[in-house]
Image (cartoon, rainbow, N blue to C red; front, top):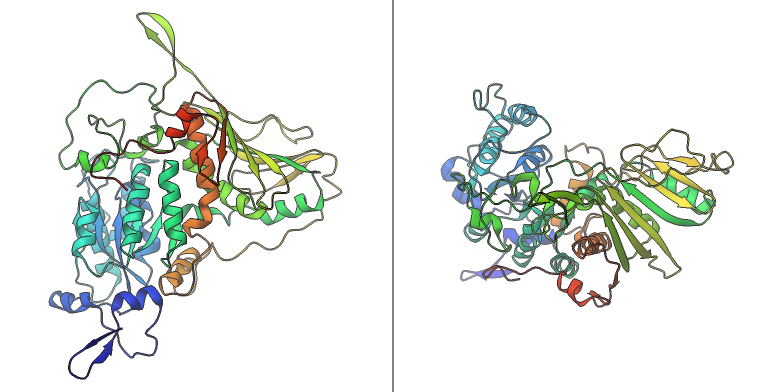
Length: 517
C-alpha cells in the first residue's frame, strides 16, 4: 500500500492486485494502461492479465487460441528476433496458414505468398485482428519488438509472459521474468543445460509467482490411475523397468556442422537469436524446429516428447531424480578422403538413441530402471503381447510377473502376461479434471489454474518446481550422449557428476558475454 495526497488516501497498485489477489473490497481498481489506452479508445477491466508473448514461430502461433479466447487475458506485446518470414517448418504446407485464417476471419489471409509463415509481425497482426473481430470495442494495438527485454522495460503493465522460444533461451528468459515479478507460461524444457534448468526451479520454488510448464497439459491424458492401480495390486509383480519410445526426431538431423555461409535473412537478428550460445555463422540448419537437434540449442527427442509422457509417471510413482545414466546411439558413416568413417560428435544429437536411467523412489524404498528409446529404437516385445510388434510409439511398465503396454501417453493400457485375466477387474481412480476440458467461462482447466495463481490463489499443478526431477533426469541424459554414451553417476543433492570431471563441466554452457545469469 502507498499513501498519496494530503489526506494520505490508501491506493493499491494494479501489480499488487494481480500478483496477490487482494483488492476484492474495492469497487474499482483502474490499471495504468487504461488511462493511456483511452486515447486509443481501448478499455480493459482492472483484473485483466496483460501478457507478453515471447517466440512467434509455428508452435507459438498454434498455441494462441487458448489465450486469445480467454476473457481474463489480453496479449499486449509480442517479441521475436525474426520480423516475418515464410521459411518455417510445420506438419503441412497450408495447415498453419488455414489455422491463422480461422483466427483472423480472413479466408484469403496471405493469399499468393508461398511458404509457412512466422515472426513477430505475423503474430501481432493475428492477435489484433482476432481481438477486433471478437472483443467489442477493442481498438488497441500490440507492441512488437525483436528483443523481449525492451518490452519488459518499457511496458509497465505487463503482468505475465508466455515463453515459446528455442530451448537454449528458456532459462534466461524465465529468470528475467521471475526477477521482474512476471507470471509465466513456458514450454518444455525449463532449460537445455542442467545448471540453467535448476536455477529456474530454485527461483520458482522461492517465489509466489504463478508458473506453468506446458507439457503438464498432457499429463492428464491416457490412464495413469489405472496403470497405478494394477501396479499397486501386484498385477505385474514388482515393477522393475519403465520403457517409453518415440518415433522422434521428425526434423532433419545434421551429423556435421554446416560449412557454407548463407547470408542472414533480412529481418532476423541473428545475434539476438543466439542469445547465450557461443557465436557462430548463421545457417538455416540451426533455426526453427531444427534447433532441437543441436546440443547447444535444443535438448533432443527426449525433451521434445518425454515431458508429455513422463511427468505424470514421475508424479504418480513418486520418483526422484536419476542417479545414473548411460546411453546407446546410432552412428552415421561418412566418407573422409573416400574412406568410410564413423561420425561421432559432441555437437548434435544422434539419429537414434536409447537412454538407461536408474531412478530411486522419493521415500528411498528402492529404485527402478527407466529406458527411453527414439529414432526407431524400441524395447523387446514382452512375452504374451497380443500383436506382432510394439507400436511405433508407446510405453511399457515391466514387472517380474508381467507387463502393462500402452500408447505413448498411457492411453489404452493393457495387461500382458499370466495375470492379465485375474486382475482385469481392478479399476483405478477417475481421471483428474484439473487439466483437460473447458470451463463455462471459456478457459481451459490448466489455464484457469494458472490464472488463479496469478490472483494469489496458490500455485497450480504445472508449477516449474514440480517438474524438477524430470528436467534433471533428461538433462543428465544429454550429458551421457555428449560423453560418447559413458555411464555417469549423479548426485542430486550436490548437483554434480561424481565419476567424470569432464562430463561434470557439461552441466552448463560457455555463456556468451552479456548473457551471464
